Length: 497
Image (cartoon, rainbow, N blue to C red; front, side):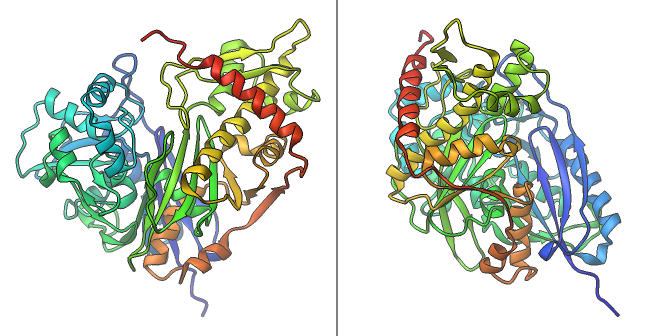
């Protein structure tokens, strides 16, 4: 009698939807997945909210869909990866949230972050958390919730990011926990001590007893409860924020290994090993993951606000292309950019500049400029922005990038990946399985439950679909990059403040 292969179900709770997917060791089983979108709420410009109950319902339904298809007996564990920084408060007794969740994109606390910086709090925040004072992160959002909603500060109050909300629901309210990667994005977590910071919790007025217990990214958090409407007794054994999960899913388990996700924006993460580096200008320092045996890995992160969104702008804003798929062939139809450089600082510049007052800039236009040159400038901007982030990371971390593993929608463009290899001077590798966040969550959970016996076994799972080697002659790449940097300078500090 043949025993059916055991799988791990990854719950990928993203910003616009939830996907649950069964992942089998060695890709031994069928592709089984279920997806549900949920509502985006925009009460005012700059404000973004989610209904946490709707997210939980989407998770439960997609999880049930997958369990029904693979069979309960074949599920070894559940892993969770989630949109980071989005935060909510709820009542531990009733299970009801205190209003909507505030999403990572929300900018309502920008003035508060500016005030804290003016009060001289940035060095403290940088040294303890590795982050910057920005409304992107969760701490000022929690402070806002306490100040603006009728939330009793008592033993029934729970604060958490989406991962801890899902764990709480999956365990029937038995477990209030998060992992180190999500905790490291709150502005409240000491990334060296790996515990909540009493000083920062006091600064933001967040009661520590309301925060979740912080646990390793790979390890058993609890068991599913029948009270939540899914089969009972399934271990929940891996959690990581989406970008850290993608780093793990790309099997970047050694220092010097890096990944870039080319989505609406891009997130470059570089594994810098077990020692937390000092804060570096323009870079975020974050926990990459922690394992049940005490292993800790740190990462430098470069957040690029606009990459794929610039392609959407060409399509929806300018009508230069009819579909996003056209941009690659259109960009490749010309030999070069015709001297045109586009800096897509539509909402400011992220790493390594962190300039909220920068704005989008196009330079070098002549009468001979065509829509193909604009398309090429957009594609090249993806490679240039990534180089800026990687160069700053290497300088800050003292680690050389071995190669760059890539995923996300724009990574389908071979021409762009060749540009990226040429700009970085390192090999760029595209994996066979692009759902790297789900893979990372599954690997973390499966490692804890013995589905994968070691990090080496996870590394063996990674399969390459395409490889792009850099041109050894760097002169053209460096010339283009130096001109790009001139264009960036022209975009800087554009908005009055």
